Length: 206
Image (cartoon, rainbow, N blue to C red; front, side, top):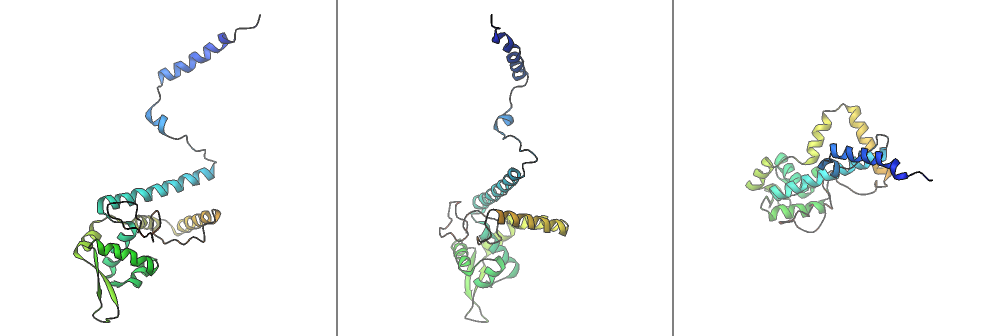
């Protein structure tokens, strides 16, 4: 007569049920992803990159929500606040952007009443961008751009660590064949040269 398999399974089921009844699942255990194995270097890199992207998105949404401005726009205001009136070409050089991209950013800032364009009293051929009173106040009270926060943190590290981080990230860029993609050193998602203007929307990245 074959053995009753159910009789052998009962103790195991009982033990499992007892474990769940004594330790009910928490919200964290149900929503949190499983931990990544320490030796899974590729997954750890993907997770780190995703965290960086999410951090940039959160910062960008905060700027748009609280100050109705984007990261590149704030960066331009801070450059003018530090250096005084500049031509668009000079402003673009300080921000490591092309002059054509900077024209779009200046257009948006002018629409918001944060800067004005006037001809230089020294050389009438030059048009200078100058902060308005509203632009000056915003530059003084807005939070630092995310890249400024990162820059300050990097400066506190030994030079060999800064070199190591730089080389590691540049290697990741090469591994995903992204070296030829043109990118300004501004932490923002989306295209900086996007044509649409940000009014109440948070999708514009210029």
